[in-house]
Image (cartoon, rainbow, N blue to C red):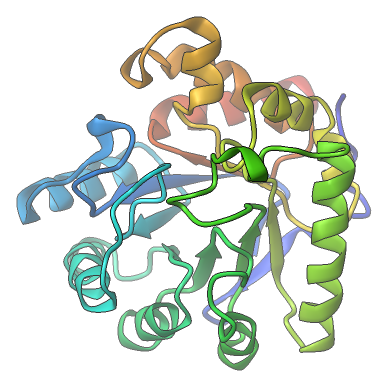
Length: 286
């Protein structure tokens, strides 16, 4: 279903300038981790990080999402210091190549988020736990006054696919209710820019993920920007009995569906293909 964005918040304050979301934005993934689920996205050394940053920018990404803590199911824990060390490598590479680039940091730790904003001018915080894994996160976002991406997840990155986290009375209604309570609290605290991420692949079965995609328009109607991150995830490769490396075509198909369902930001490994999808979908709805 094609969503009319006329009643939706379509801009973000990123470092004092407005980011226009009337055209969907493409967020390129920069993993400075050794164990991300898609091995093609891993950057094992400084040269690989620099090359990845260059590729993301050259292919037309509107923003870069950098993460130093793998959130794949069953991932190893990482200390705060190690997460910062990894992030510093990527952030220094980004600021060398494109000082004005819009950057989000993928972390559930308030301390790490604050450090990235204050030390490297990161403009967006991307929290997979929506404040559930660090009680200080909402206060930190309110103090920093930066856009906040909050994702739906149950449990932790280590435990999220355990059976107790995979039961929903109605996955769409349950995630909507989860967001409603979080939005109320953040709004009360004075957070102005909130982006919703339904959390595809996090504490959800393959069927749950496709049900969320089918009903994506219900999340878009909340009136807040909507981020969709399905790039090469298990909802694609498990359904098609392929590998993450073989999942680009499925990713593009789902990105198109997400755009038609109201997504404002696509978080992707493959920037060029996502940029092309945005252009094609935009042309069809002029």
